[in-house]
Length: 218
Image (cartoon, rainbow, N blue to C red; front, side, top):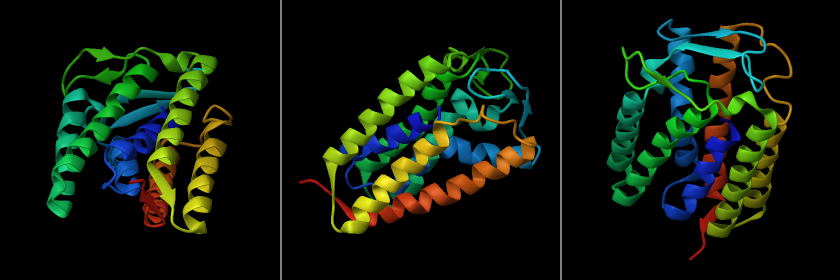
């Protein structure tokens, strides 16, 4: 999943209006923020195998600390506790945890059976949506459209920046998604990890910027 994770962040704003869109975006992609760091440190591993799936060439051989079900729950609770300590927003903290945990569920749908249940466990799960480009586009497209609709319904722009920055964010996500990672072979595993970190360093602050120029609809 890619835009599907962002769709969850957008939709969650309606349920948790006090939580910044930036926090929700970071929560939705948090596992993918942990993963490239662990890859660069040599803790987790993946291979680039052209044609491995229809959507991307990534064979996730070992990533239990970022993407196992158990560690996802640990990361979700940790993220929520940090948010609650900073905001004292109990309801928001619950939704932040749900958004973090949603990442595993969406990846379970998209990935081949490579999603571990816990570090050291042998069983791996995955429904393999990524084996079909049309099915992936359909599922993520519907999710993305619904997320946008819910976010627009839940917030309104307070100035022109709130509108322009929001729609530019949406357009950039689509521009990155439509050609897809299948368009060309990445130069190396390290390059994929570095690009992932750079992308998150852009999308996170951008989402916080959007939130400062939009407000919840009463």
